Length: 168
Image: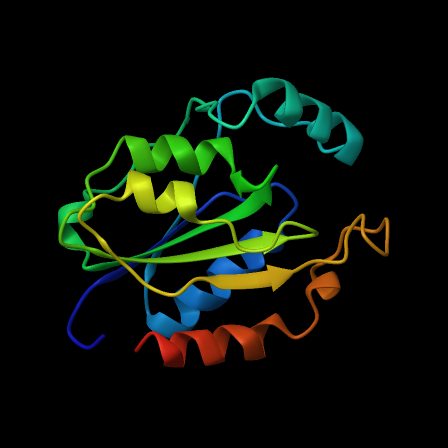
């Protein structure tokens, strides 16, 4: 996507989505913004799951950081862990608070069991051109209890192939 400014916006609970976001930003020469919530989620996996479950699938977490003016960007990569079959609450808040008409939105998710779940993202980005999404499997809590970026295998190769398919 030549001569067009790119932005990567992501929320990461366990650093996995962050690793993918940073890789995408590096490969596409994009600016990058990490969403931060005012009431941070517990780092204990089971405690985090309990809280996310109690908040439900439509909860919008309050963000503590300001967002850049999106008018300066044509392509916006949005990344989130998959929580209960949808995007994380911080990403939901970001998407609801911004306008994406005329933008290209490229979604990516890290997940352990749910896969790529972008239906809600599509409804929140009305008027945007939504690219094919990127789904990065993470073995954490599926076949290992150690949270580590290595649990995502060779996500860089998957990401490179995805970026090529979507024209970036």
